[in-house]
Length: 442
Ligand SMILES: Nc1nc2c(ncn2[C@@H]2O[C@H](COP(=O)(O)OP(=O)(O)O)[C@@H](O)[C@H]2O)c(=O)[nH]1
Ligand SMILES: [Mg+2]
Image (cartoon, rainbow, N blue to C red; front, side):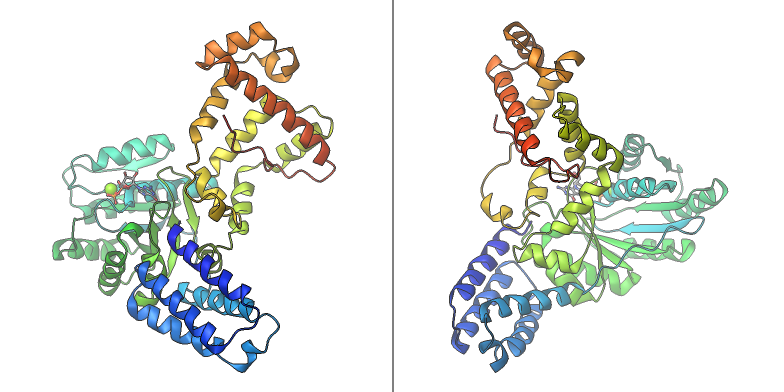
Protein backbone atom coordinates (compact mmCIF):
# COMPACT_ATOMS: atom_id res chain seq x y z
CA UNK A 1 0.00 0.00 0.00
CA UNK A 2 1.39 3.41 -1.02
CA UNK A 3 4.88 1.94 -1.43
CA UNK A 4 6.55 4.92 -3.04
CA UNK A 5 5.05 7.53 -0.75
CA UNK A 6 6.02 5.53 2.31
CA UNK A 7 9.61 5.34 1.06
CA UNK A 8 9.80 9.06 0.44
CA UNK A 9 8.47 9.92 3.88
CA UNK A 10 10.95 7.52 5.36
CA UNK A 11 13.84 9.31 3.66
CA UNK A 12 12.61 12.77 4.58
CA UNK A 13 12.11 11.85 8.21
CA UNK A 14 15.42 10.08 8.46
CA UNK A 15 17.16 13.28 7.39
CA UNK A 16 15.18 15.34 9.89
CA UNK A 17 15.79 13.01 12.79
CA UNK A 18 19.45 12.67 11.98
CA UNK A 19 20.03 16.41 11.79
CA UNK A 20 20.20 16.92 15.56
CA UNK A 21 19.97 20.69 15.58
CA UNK A 22 17.52 22.06 13.07
CA UNK A 23 17.34 25.47 11.49
CA UNK A 24 14.30 27.07 10.02
CA UNK A 25 15.85 26.39 6.65
CA UNK A 26 16.17 22.63 7.34
CA UNK A 27 12.51 22.54 8.17
CA UNK A 28 11.40 24.48 5.13
CA UNK A 29 13.51 22.21 2.92
CA UNK A 30 11.94 19.14 4.47
CA UNK A 31 8.45 20.52 3.98
CA UNK A 32 9.23 21.25 0.37
CA UNK A 33 10.12 17.58 -0.02
CA UNK A 34 6.92 16.54 1.72
CA UNK A 35 5.01 18.73 -0.70
CA UNK A 36 6.70 17.15 -3.70
CA UNK A 37 6.11 13.63 -2.38
CA UNK A 38 2.40 14.30 -1.93
CA UNK A 39 2.01 15.83 -5.37
CA UNK A 40 3.82 12.89 -6.94
CA UNK A 41 1.44 10.57 -5.11
CA UNK A 42 -1.34 12.36 -7.02
CA UNK A 43 -2.81 14.17 -4.02
CA UNK A 44 -5.05 17.06 -5.01
CA UNK A 45 -2.88 20.21 -5.27
CA UNK A 46 -5.18 22.39 -3.17
CA UNK A 47 -5.19 19.77 -0.47
CA UNK A 48 -1.39 19.68 -0.55
CA UNK A 49 -1.15 23.46 -0.37
CA UNK A 50 -3.37 23.69 2.70
CA UNK A 51 -1.69 20.74 4.33
CA UNK A 52 1.80 22.20 3.99
CA UNK A 53 0.58 25.57 5.21
CA UNK A 54 -0.90 24.11 8.35
CA UNK A 55 2.14 21.94 9.08
CA UNK A 56 4.37 24.95 8.57
CA UNK A 57 2.42 27.05 11.02
CA UNK A 58 3.12 24.59 13.79
CA UNK A 59 6.56 23.43 12.71
CA UNK A 60 8.44 26.65 12.12
CA UNK A 61 8.64 28.26 15.50
CA UNK A 62 10.66 28.67 18.61
CA UNK A 63 8.87 25.85 20.38
CA UNK A 64 9.90 23.19 17.91
CA UNK A 65 13.39 24.51 17.30
CA UNK A 66 14.18 24.66 20.99
CA UNK A 67 12.69 21.29 21.83
CA UNK A 68 15.00 18.40 22.67
CA UNK A 69 14.25 16.45 19.52
CA UNK A 70 13.04 18.86 16.85
CA UNK A 71 13.08 16.23 14.10
CA UNK A 72 10.82 13.98 16.12
CA UNK A 73 8.52 16.92 16.85
CA UNK A 74 8.08 17.63 13.17
CA UNK A 75 7.32 14.00 12.39
CA UNK A 76 4.63 14.19 15.06
CA UNK A 77 3.16 17.38 13.59
CA UNK A 78 3.01 15.84 10.10
CA UNK A 79 1.41 12.73 11.58
CA UNK A 80 -1.22 14.73 13.48
CA UNK A 81 -2.08 16.87 10.47
CA UNK A 82 -2.35 13.83 8.24
CA UNK A 83 -4.81 12.23 10.66
CA UNK A 84 -6.86 15.43 10.52
CA UNK A 85 -6.77 15.38 6.73
CA UNK A 86 -7.99 11.79 6.64
CA UNK A 87 -10.96 12.61 8.84
CA UNK A 88 -9.68 12.50 12.47
CA UNK A 89 -11.81 9.64 13.72
CA UNK A 90 -13.19 6.43 12.28
CA UNK A 91 -16.78 6.57 11.05
CA UNK A 92 -18.46 3.19 11.39
CA UNK A 93 -21.27 1.99 9.13
CA UNK A 94 -24.87 2.48 10.24
CA UNK A 95 -25.63 -0.28 12.75
CA UNK A 96 -27.62 -3.27 11.53
CA UNK A 97 -30.51 -2.75 13.92
CA UNK A 98 -33.65 -2.46 11.78
CA UNK A 99 -35.64 -5.10 10.05
CA UNK A 100 -34.08 -4.58 7.63
CA UNK A 101 -31.22 -2.08 7.55
CA UNK A 102 -30.39 -1.17 3.94
CA UNK A 103 -26.94 -0.45 2.46
CA UNK A 104 -26.92 0.88 -1.09
CA UNK A 105 -23.69 0.57 -3.09
CA UNK A 106 -22.93 2.71 -6.10
CA UNK A 107 -19.99 3.50 -8.34
CA UNK A 108 -18.58 3.04 -11.81
CA UNK A 109 -18.34 -0.29 -13.57
CA UNK A 110 -15.49 -2.41 -12.32
CA UNK A 111 -14.91 -0.34 -9.20
CA UNK A 112 -15.63 -3.30 -6.94
CA UNK A 113 -19.31 -2.97 -5.94
CA UNK A 114 -20.24 -6.61 -6.36
CA UNK A 115 -17.10 -7.73 -4.59
CA UNK A 116 -17.88 -5.36 -1.73
CA UNK A 117 -21.47 -6.67 -1.52
CA UNK A 118 -20.04 -10.08 -0.71
CA UNK A 119 -17.63 -8.65 1.82
CA UNK A 120 -20.37 -6.76 3.63
CA UNK A 121 -22.59 -9.84 3.66
CA UNK A 122 -19.80 -11.94 5.13
CA UNK A 123 -19.08 -9.32 7.76
CA UNK A 124 -22.75 -9.25 8.74
CA UNK A 125 -22.85 -13.02 8.99
CA UNK A 126 -19.85 -12.99 11.30
CA UNK A 127 -21.92 -10.74 13.58
CA UNK A 128 -24.76 -13.28 13.43
CA UNK A 129 -26.91 -11.06 11.19
CA UNK A 130 -28.83 -12.35 8.22
CA UNK A 131 -27.95 -10.49 4.99
CA UNK A 132 -29.74 -10.43 1.64
CA UNK A 133 -27.85 -9.58 -1.54
CA UNK A 134 -29.87 -7.77 -4.19
CA UNK A 135 -28.98 -7.98 -7.88
CA UNK A 136 -29.90 -4.50 -9.05
CA UNK A 137 -27.53 -4.44 -12.00
CA UNK A 138 -29.76 -5.55 -14.85
CA UNK A 139 -27.69 -4.05 -17.65
CA UNK A 140 -24.58 -6.18 -17.70
CA UNK A 141 -25.66 -9.63 -18.90
CA UNK A 142 -23.55 -11.61 -16.45
CA UNK A 143 -24.02 -9.33 -13.42
CA UNK A 144 -26.88 -11.23 -11.81
CA UNK A 145 -25.08 -14.51 -12.32
CA UNK A 146 -21.89 -13.07 -10.77
CA UNK A 147 -23.78 -12.13 -7.62
CA UNK A 148 -25.46 -15.54 -7.46
CA UNK A 149 -22.12 -17.30 -7.65
CA UNK A 150 -20.76 -15.04 -4.93
CA UNK A 151 -23.87 -15.64 -2.81
CA UNK A 152 -23.36 -19.37 -3.03
CA UNK A 153 -19.72 -19.04 -2.10
CA UNK A 154 -20.51 -17.22 1.14
CA UNK A 155 -23.79 -19.01 1.72
CA UNK A 156 -26.01 -15.93 1.40
CA UNK A 157 -29.39 -15.50 -0.30
CA UNK A 158 -29.55 -13.45 -3.48
CA UNK A 159 -32.68 -11.59 -4.57
CA UNK A 160 -33.33 -10.98 -8.26
CA UNK A 161 -36.36 -10.26 -10.46
CA UNK A 162 -36.50 -10.80 -14.20
CA UNK A 163 -37.89 -8.07 -16.40
CA UNK A 164 -38.09 -5.34 -13.76
CA UNK A 165 -36.21 -2.06 -13.48
CA UNK A 166 -33.65 -1.64 -10.68
CA UNK A 167 -35.72 0.76 -8.49
CA UNK A 168 -38.61 -1.71 -8.51
CA UNK A 169 -36.27 -4.64 -7.80
CA UNK A 170 -34.79 -2.82 -4.82
CA UNK A 171 -38.20 -1.98 -3.41
CA UNK A 172 -39.45 -5.55 -3.80
CA UNK A 173 -36.24 -6.83 -2.21
CA UNK A 174 -36.79 -4.67 0.85
CA UNK A 175 -40.34 -5.97 1.21
CA UNK A 176 -39.13 -9.52 0.80
CA UNK A 177 -36.50 -8.93 3.48
CA UNK A 178 -39.10 -7.54 5.88
CA UNK A 179 -41.31 -10.54 5.42
CA UNK A 180 -38.52 -13.07 5.73
CA UNK A 181 -36.66 -11.53 8.67
CA UNK A 182 -33.46 -10.48 6.98
CA UNK A 183 -31.40 -8.02 9.02
CA UNK A 184 -29.45 -6.38 6.23
CA UNK A 185 -30.26 -5.67 2.58
CA UNK A 186 -27.29 -4.94 0.33
CA UNK A 187 -28.19 -3.28 -2.98
CA UNK A 188 -25.61 -4.05 -5.67
CA UNK A 189 -26.53 -1.39 -8.21
CA UNK A 190 -25.43 -1.01 -11.82
CA UNK A 191 -22.38 0.97 -12.79
CA UNK A 192 -21.53 2.79 -15.98
CA UNK A 193 -18.27 3.47 -17.70
CA UNK A 194 -18.73 7.18 -16.96
CA UNK A 195 -21.15 9.18 -14.90
CA UNK A 196 -24.24 9.92 -16.94
CA UNK A 197 -27.57 11.39 -16.16
CA UNK A 198 -29.58 8.22 -16.67
CA UNK A 199 -27.47 6.43 -14.07
CA UNK A 200 -27.81 9.25 -11.56
CA UNK A 201 -31.56 9.47 -12.10
CA UNK A 202 -31.89 5.75 -11.49
CA UNK A 203 -29.82 5.88 -8.31
CA UNK A 204 -31.90 8.84 -7.15
CA UNK A 205 -35.05 6.85 -7.71
CA UNK A 206 -33.73 3.86 -5.77
CA UNK A 207 -32.79 6.16 -2.93
CA UNK A 208 -36.26 7.75 -2.86
CA UNK A 209 -38.09 4.43 -3.05
CA UNK A 210 -36.06 2.47 -0.54
CA UNK A 211 -34.66 5.03 1.90
CA UNK A 212 -31.28 3.35 2.48
CA UNK A 213 -29.45 3.70 5.80
CA UNK A 214 -26.12 3.91 4.00
CA UNK A 215 -25.35 5.17 0.50
CA UNK A 216 -21.79 4.11 -0.16
CA UNK A 217 -19.70 5.06 -3.14
CA UNK A 218 -17.17 2.43 -4.12
CA UNK A 219 -14.18 4.32 -5.51
CA UNK A 220 -11.25 2.58 -7.19
CA UNK A 221 -8.18 4.00 -5.48
CA UNK A 222 -6.00 3.06 -8.45
CA UNK A 223 -7.67 5.83 -10.46
CA UNK A 224 -6.25 8.62 -8.28
CA UNK A 225 -7.75 12.05 -8.87
CA UNK A 226 -10.50 10.60 -11.07
CA UNK A 227 -11.81 8.84 -7.99
CA UNK A 228 -11.87 12.15 -6.14
CA UNK A 229 -13.79 13.93 -8.90
CA UNK A 230 -16.18 11.04 -9.11
CA UNK A 231 -16.82 11.12 -5.38
CA UNK A 232 -17.52 14.83 -5.57
CA UNK A 233 -20.11 14.36 -8.30
CA UNK A 234 -21.83 11.44 -6.62
CA UNK A 235 -21.88 13.26 -3.31
CA UNK A 236 -23.42 16.39 -4.82
CA UNK A 237 -26.17 14.40 -6.43
CA UNK A 238 -26.92 11.66 -3.92
CA UNK A 239 -25.65 12.94 -0.56
CA UNK A 240 -23.47 9.91 0.09
CA UNK A 241 -23.09 8.67 3.65
CA UNK A 242 -19.62 7.32 2.99
CA UNK A 243 -16.89 6.29 0.58
CA UNK A 244 -15.32 2.86 0.30
CA UNK A 245 -11.85 2.85 -1.24
CA UNK A 246 -11.33 -0.31 -3.22
CA UNK A 247 -8.15 -1.95 -4.54
CA UNK A 248 -5.94 -0.35 -1.93
CA UNK A 249 -3.90 -3.55 -2.02
CA UNK A 250 -2.66 -2.69 -5.48
CA UNK A 251 -0.08 -0.06 -6.35
CA UNK A 252 -2.37 2.88 -5.68
CA UNK A 253 -0.20 5.93 -5.07
CA UNK A 254 -2.33 7.28 -2.26
CA UNK A 255 -3.72 10.39 -3.94
CA UNK A 256 -7.35 9.28 -3.74
CA UNK A 257 -7.13 8.09 -0.16
CA UNK A 258 -5.50 11.29 1.04
CA UNK A 259 -7.66 13.75 -0.92
CA UNK A 260 -11.19 12.36 -0.91
CA UNK A 261 -12.20 13.37 2.57
CA UNK A 262 -10.74 16.85 2.31
CA UNK A 263 -12.24 17.55 -1.14
CA UNK A 264 -15.71 16.10 -0.64
CA UNK A 265 -16.24 16.30 3.12
CA UNK A 266 -17.57 12.77 2.89
CA UNK A 267 -15.97 10.25 5.26
CA UNK A 268 -14.06 7.18 4.09
CA UNK A 269 -15.68 4.32 5.99
CA UNK A 270 -14.03 1.17 4.65
CA UNK A 271 -11.10 0.04 2.57
CA UNK A 272 -11.12 -2.96 0.33
CA UNK A 273 -7.75 -4.70 0.13
CA UNK A 274 -8.18 -7.74 -2.09
CA UNK A 275 -10.53 -9.90 -4.09
CA UNK A 276 -11.48 -12.37 -1.37
CA UNK A 277 -14.69 -11.86 0.67
CA UNK A 278 -12.66 -11.33 3.84
CA UNK A 279 -10.39 -8.61 2.41
CA UNK A 280 -12.13 -5.65 4.04
CA UNK A 281 -10.98 -3.23 6.73
CA UNK A 282 -12.57 -0.38 8.63
CA UNK A 283 -10.93 2.94 7.83
CA UNK A 284 -9.14 4.52 10.77
CA UNK A 285 -7.51 7.88 9.97
CA UNK A 286 -4.86 7.49 12.68
CA UNK A 287 -3.86 3.99 11.61
CA UNK A 288 -3.83 4.94 7.93
CA UNK A 289 -1.63 7.96 8.69
CA UNK A 290 0.80 5.67 10.52
CA UNK A 291 0.94 3.32 7.56
CA UNK A 292 1.52 6.15 5.10
CA UNK A 293 4.33 7.51 7.26
CA UNK A 294 5.92 4.05 7.49
CA UNK A 295 5.11 3.53 11.16
CA UNK A 296 3.17 0.33 10.60
CA UNK A 297 -0.26 -0.52 11.96
CA UNK A 298 0.02 -3.00 14.75
CA UNK A 299 -3.50 -2.34 16.02
CA UNK A 300 -5.14 -3.55 12.82
CA UNK A 301 -2.83 -6.55 12.71
CA UNK A 302 -3.79 -7.60 16.22
CA UNK A 303 -7.47 -7.08 15.46
CA UNK A 304 -7.21 -9.25 12.39
CA UNK A 305 -5.58 -11.96 14.43
CA UNK A 306 -8.26 -11.73 17.09
CA UNK A 307 -11.01 -11.99 14.51
CA UNK A 308 -9.78 -15.36 13.28
CA UNK A 309 -8.12 -16.84 16.34
CA UNK A 310 -10.34 -18.74 18.69
CA UNK A 311 -9.32 -17.78 22.23
CA UNK A 312 -9.89 -21.25 23.67
CA UNK A 313 -8.04 -22.93 20.83
CA UNK A 314 -5.16 -20.54 21.41
CA UNK A 315 -5.03 -21.48 25.09
CA UNK A 316 -4.99 -25.18 24.25
CA UNK A 317 -2.27 -24.64 21.74
CA UNK A 318 -0.24 -22.70 24.29
CA UNK A 319 -0.56 -25.62 26.68
CA UNK A 320 0.65 -28.11 24.08
CA UNK A 321 3.54 -25.84 23.23
CA UNK A 322 4.59 -25.72 26.84
CA UNK A 323 4.64 -29.51 26.84
CA UNK A 324 6.56 -29.59 23.57
CA UNK A 325 3.71 -31.53 21.98
CA UNK A 326 3.38 -29.26 18.95
CA UNK A 327 2.40 -31.38 15.95
CA UNK A 328 1.93 -30.92 12.24
CA UNK A 329 -1.82 -30.70 12.89
CA UNK A 330 -1.23 -27.62 15.05
CA UNK A 331 1.11 -26.28 12.46
CA UNK A 332 -1.49 -26.73 9.74
CA UNK A 333 -4.18 -25.01 11.85
CA UNK A 334 -1.87 -22.05 12.38
CA UNK A 335 -1.33 -21.75 8.66
CA UNK A 336 -5.06 -21.74 8.00
CA UNK A 337 -5.61 -19.01 10.58
CA UNK A 338 -2.88 -16.89 9.07
CA UNK A 339 -4.42 -17.29 5.62
CA UNK A 340 -7.77 -16.06 6.91
CA UNK A 341 -6.14 -12.82 7.97
CA UNK A 342 -5.55 -11.69 4.40
CA UNK A 343 -2.79 -11.44 1.80
CA UNK A 344 0.59 -12.09 3.39
CA UNK A 345 2.34 -9.02 2.01
CA UNK A 346 -0.37 -6.69 3.25
CA UNK A 347 -0.04 -8.23 6.72
CA UNK A 348 3.71 -7.84 6.76
CA UNK A 349 3.37 -4.23 5.68
CA UNK A 350 1.57 -3.47 8.92
CA UNK A 351 4.57 -4.41 11.03
CA UNK A 352 6.62 -1.26 11.62
CA UNK A 353 9.78 -1.29 9.55
CA UNK A 354 8.98 -4.53 7.77
CA UNK A 355 7.20 -2.96 4.80
CA UNK A 356 10.38 -1.04 4.00
CA UNK A 357 12.68 -4.01 4.60
CA UNK A 358 10.66 -6.13 2.22
CA UNK A 359 10.62 -3.56 -0.53
CA UNK A 360 10.96 -5.29 -3.87
CA UNK A 361 10.81 -8.72 -2.29
CA UNK A 362 8.13 -10.85 -3.87
CA UNK A 363 6.45 -12.82 -1.11
CA UNK A 364 6.12 -16.30 -2.50
CA UNK A 365 2.77 -17.64 -1.36
CA UNK A 366 3.50 -20.73 -3.43
CA UNK A 367 5.88 -21.80 -0.67
CA UNK A 368 2.89 -21.97 1.64
CA UNK A 369 0.91 -24.01 -0.87
CA UNK A 370 3.77 -26.48 -1.06
CA UNK A 371 3.96 -26.78 2.71
CA UNK A 372 0.22 -27.40 2.81
CA UNK A 373 0.45 -30.13 0.19
CA UNK A 374 3.24 -31.89 2.04
CA UNK A 375 1.35 -31.85 5.33
CA UNK A 376 -1.78 -33.10 3.60
CA UNK A 377 0.16 -36.05 2.23
CA UNK A 378 1.14 -37.19 5.70
CA UNK A 379 -0.89 -39.80 7.55
CA UNK A 380 -2.63 -38.68 10.77
CA UNK A 381 -0.06 -40.65 12.69
CA UNK A 382 2.83 -38.90 10.97
CA UNK A 383 1.31 -35.51 11.64
CA UNK A 384 0.97 -36.29 15.33
CA UNK A 385 4.39 -37.83 15.63
CA UNK A 386 6.72 -36.54 12.92
CA UNK A 387 9.69 -38.39 14.43
CA UNK A 388 8.51 -41.60 12.77
CA UNK A 389 8.96 -40.13 9.30
CA UNK A 390 11.84 -42.16 7.91
CA UNK A 391 13.33 -42.38 4.43
CA UNK A 392 10.61 -44.49 2.84
CA UNK A 393 7.85 -42.37 4.40
CA UNK A 394 9.60 -39.26 3.07
CA UNK A 395 9.62 -40.70 -0.45
CA UNK A 396 5.92 -41.53 -0.19
CA UNK A 397 5.02 -38.06 1.09
CA UNK A 398 7.13 -36.40 -1.61
CA UNK A 399 5.49 -38.42 -4.37
CA UNK A 400 2.00 -37.90 -2.92
CA UNK A 401 2.39 -34.12 -2.75
CA UNK A 402 4.22 -33.70 -6.03
CA UNK A 403 7.44 -32.51 -4.37
CA UNK A 404 10.98 -33.74 -4.01
CA UNK A 405 12.34 -35.51 -0.94
CA UNK A 406 14.52 -32.44 -0.47
CA UNK A 407 11.39 -30.32 0.04
CA UNK A 408 10.05 -32.75 2.61
CA UNK A 409 13.40 -32.73 4.38
CA UNK A 410 13.45 -28.93 4.45
CA UNK A 411 10.01 -28.75 5.98
CA UNK A 412 10.85 -31.34 8.64
CA UNK A 413 14.04 -29.54 9.50
CA UNK A 414 12.20 -26.23 9.84
CA UNK A 415 9.46 -27.86 11.85
CA UNK A 416 11.84 -29.35 14.41
CA UNK A 417 13.84 -26.14 14.63
CA UNK A 418 10.65 -24.22 15.18
CA UNK A 419 9.45 -26.63 17.83
CA UNK A 420 12.70 -26.21 19.68
CA UNK A 421 12.55 -22.44 19.39
CA UNK A 422 8.96 -22.34 20.55
CA UNK A 423 9.84 -24.44 23.55
CA UNK A 424 12.50 -21.90 24.50
CA UNK A 425 10.16 -18.94 24.26
CA UNK A 426 7.04 -20.62 25.58
CA UNK A 427 7.69 -19.36 29.04
CA UNK A 428 6.16 -16.23 27.60
CA UNK A 429 2.43 -16.29 27.09
CA UNK A 430 1.66 -17.59 23.61
CA UNK A 431 -1.25 -15.70 22.11
CA UNK A 432 -2.03 -17.87 19.13
CA UNK A 433 -0.08 -15.70 16.71
CA UNK A 434 2.39 -17.66 14.62
CA UNK A 435 5.73 -16.39 15.85
CA UNK A 436 8.72 -16.29 13.58
CA UNK A 437 7.38 -19.20 11.61
CA UNK A 438 6.49 -17.45 8.36
CA UNK A 439 7.25 -17.06 5.60
CA UNK A 440 8.96 -20.31 4.84
CA UNK A 441 12.04 -20.45 2.72
CA UNK A 442 11.33 -23.37 0.46
N1 LIG B 1 -7.06 -6.37 -5.98
C1 LIG B 1 -8.33 -6.04 -5.76
N2 LIG B 1 -9.25 -6.34 -6.70
C2 LIG B 1 -10.53 -6.01 -6.44
C3 LIG B 1 -10.93 -5.37 -5.24
N3 LIG B 1 -12.27 -5.16 -5.32
C4 LIG B 1 -12.66 -5.66 -6.51
N4 LIG B 1 -11.64 -6.17 -7.21
C5 LIG B 1 -11.65 -6.77 -8.56
O1 LIG B 1 -12.09 -5.80 -9.48
C6 LIG B 1 -12.88 -6.38 -10.50
C7 LIG B 1 -14.24 -5.70 -10.58
O2 LIG B 1 -14.96 -5.94 -9.39
P1 LIG B 1 -16.56 -6.00 -9.32
O3 LIG B 1 -16.92 -6.19 -7.89
O4 LIG B 1 -17.10 -6.97 -10.29
O5 LIG B 1 -16.91 -4.51 -9.78
P2 LIG B 1 -18.33 -3.84 -10.07
O6 LIG B 1 -18.46 -3.74 -11.55
O7 LIG B 1 -18.25 -2.50 -9.42
O8 LIG B 1 -19.39 -4.71 -9.45
C8 LIG B 1 -12.98 -7.85 -10.16
O9 LIG B 1 -12.02 -8.54 -10.92
C9 LIG B 1 -12.63 -7.90 -8.68
O10 LIG B 1 -12.08 -9.14 -8.33
C10 LIG B 1 -9.91 -5.06 -4.27
O11 LIG B 1 -10.13 -4.48 -3.21
N5 LIG B 1 -8.64 -5.42 -4.59
MG1 LIG C 1 -21.10 -5.52 -10.33
